[in-house]
Length: 94
Length: 390
Image 1: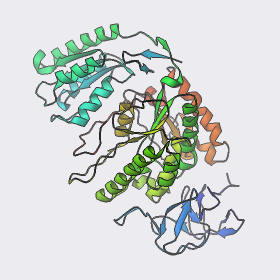
Image 2: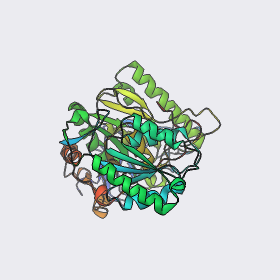
Image 3: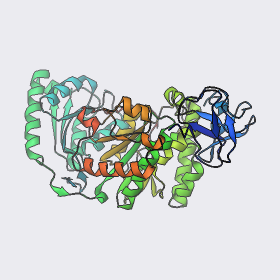
């Protein structure tokens, strides 16, 4: 399990899923081989950015958009409700 | 596998005696009767004011293939027309008797009459499975609850693998929860058996999105988010995989059954144009009741954060993708899909395990929920047109 701290579900994804609680400073590998340093704590099951994702850009998981960045996201940052929002809402909810 | 042949030609995998109360005021007497008839299942509708959805659910559950006999326990002044309900259940070929609490003179007399009625119904019901059963006679309902990020990685795709094998073997599977498929639009359209099915899916997704916006929230809970799921699209893409990868043969409305074996999407989202907006599904047991009302005899329930619920009438198999939850809640989990997340097993490995267990449970093996006596049900009022019925 320690060999696989994250899972990238699809080559097009710009986030990975943490398979362990990731601590800041830990490095994880993107599908293209790039090493990304984790910037903050990312809990088991949560997402970490594999590259910079600009405000308004789609966040991709399973090869499909799961919403849009609501802030600029740095590589290695935790991706969750504070910087990712649904595109399905007229209201401002997830 | 062996099962119980019913008068309508369907085959049950359980042979329950159902004690059904027709208003909350009769609930306790129904419980008294069922306690004296070991194994009898209690269910019912709490409301006094008759409701088309609730009455339809009571008819579908009373005539479910896993039920061999029915006692209706009425207080006597509820608005629901209990004799008409009994008549409809009997018309469909089911054994049914009524116990009226006011009519017979109170709790004790109703209890005595109910127990005697139950004993004679039991005597008429088959003593054991009496007919050979193959997958073509089986409809499996698939539900997820207490999802987290592992659901889409392990429990749902492994369950989907088993669903694919079931459909290949000539069986039927039903998945539901359209509001938890928002964001899967293109994949669903591609999997639709034809243009009409794709159009029905599109229509359902549009209503589900409207519903979410009208309610001011989508079907993603605080627990889902704590577990790492951020948006409804993300939850949906994970949820979809429990339906496998095959062709979607049709879209069912509430209480409609598959006309032919295959994979079906159950659309319970009603029209949301009116002023009265309500949830299409209040909780997971509400969802399980809908799947049974569409004929599912066996239920697959995937989780990540952990769920304990069972069902009064159909065995519920729990598949958990979160290894931490599987360890912590081992008493409730039938299949641990956690090794997929740990890199120790593949999706087909666990899928094979699920499919093998489905055959054993269809043949009488008890699930963890059955062993623990989890016999839940939930029939709420569905105001307005929260559910469009077939």
